[in-house]
Image 1: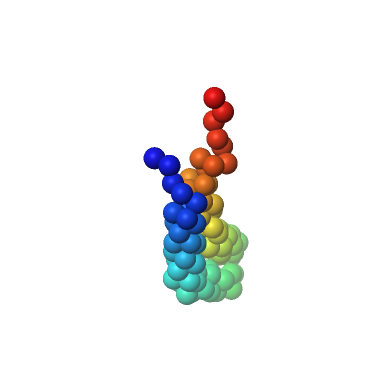
Image 2 (image 1 turned 120 degrees about the horizontal axis):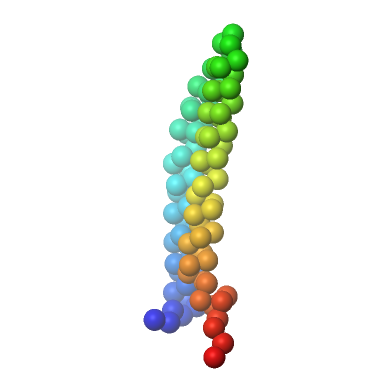
Length: 87
């Protein structure tokens, strides 16, 4: 099935808007989770420090996932134009 440029552009716009919506929805929970993890650094043990750093890095990684998912979706939408098979 061939898709027109307008259909691809509309699908790209929808994917981008959904990515922004997911990022906005994740932002408040990311702040709370990072804050709780940062508070764990104040305890007097190396274990709590390592757990806090790991938690903050994990929350930071989650924040970038919608962007990677958008990239994959855009490649799926536009991929057939980018990677045309020549006869």
